[in-house]
Structures are given as C-alpha cells and as structure tokens.
Image 1 (spheres, protein in one colour):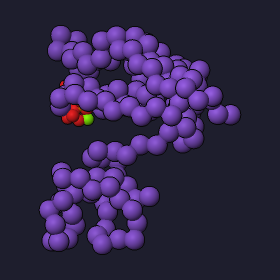
Image 2 (cartoon, rainbow, N blue to C red):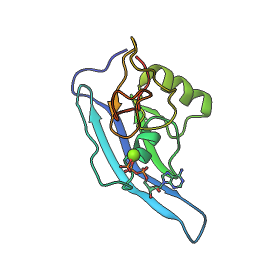
Image 3 (tube, protein in one colour):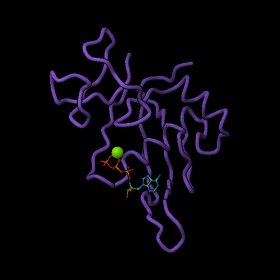
Image 4 (cartoon, helix red, strand yellow):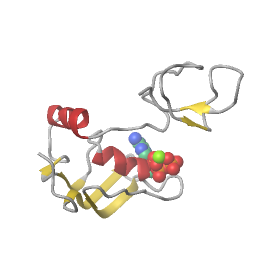
Length: 135
Ligand SMILES: Nc1ncnc2c1ncn2[C@@H]1O[C@H](COP(=O)(O)OP(=O)(O)OP(=O)(O)O)[C@@H](O)[C@H]1O
Ligand SMILES: [Mg+2]
C-alpha cells in the first residue's frame, strides 16, 4: 500500500553508531535524526569519513545502530531480525554501491552500469571506473 503524498516514509530518531574496540572506539553517528517524505529527494553530503555510508547501511538494513530507531513506513528496521531486514532490502529499497558488493562489469556491454572515476575499466578504452551493478 502506498503512502499519501508528502507523508513521512522514513524516520530516523536518535541514531547512534560506533566502530572499533573499547578505548579506541570511533563514534560515527551521535544521535542523528532524519525524516524523509514520500517523493522527496535527499542527498547526504559530507567529507570523507563523516558517516554517509554508515547511515545508508543502517537505513538499508545492512547494519544495525547501537541505539535509535529507523522507521520505514512505520516499521522499525533497526529492531527487525535478519530475515525481516533481508525481505525489506529485497522489496522496499535499492542500493547502488560505491565500491564493493559488485560483480566486475564488462566493457563494452549491453547491460546498463554506473561509471565513476575510482575503478579502472576492464579495457584500455578509458581509465574511468565501474562501481555499480548492471541494471
Ligand atoms: N565496518 C567498520 N569498521 C570500523 N570502522 C568503520 C567501519 N565502517 C566505517 N567505519 C569508520 O566510520 C567512519 C565513517 O565511515 P563511512 O564509510 O560511513 O564514511 P563516509 O562518509 O561514507 O566516507 P566516504 O565519503 O569516504 O565514502 C570512518 O572513520 C570509517 O573508518
Ligand atoms: Mg561512503
């Protein structure tokens, strides 16, 4: 069932996430709040290492926050089990990964791919990169 236009579809409240062992812990997200409405386009901007990917992994159900809630259409992704999060990833959202989790792309190819600057193409035609999977 789709939500009415303008209604909040995603709500993150008081999200905390840190990495590393005790004593050398890096606190990446410290009480982050975010609300995204249906049809809204949002860009997360910030310097390298500020936690953009960390946030998207939490919203995408790939990782879980230390604390806080992530409500997608009213369902708490942060509290969901592995299976429920897998179904959520399968049905409710799409990821274009920046680097990994991707199969190598062939070039030229009939498949659609997103090209960025980081990874060499598998031919000598260009030094551009392929980071996203085929459509
Ligand atoms: N799995 C992990 N284990 C340990 N530290 C991590 C892990 N994931 C992220 N970090 C650390 O968390 C911080 C935020 O990383 P993150 O990848 O979210 O940043 P980013 O804003 O996406 O950076 P970039 O613009 O380079 O992609 C960095 O200090 C990073 O080293
Ligand atoms: Mg990143």
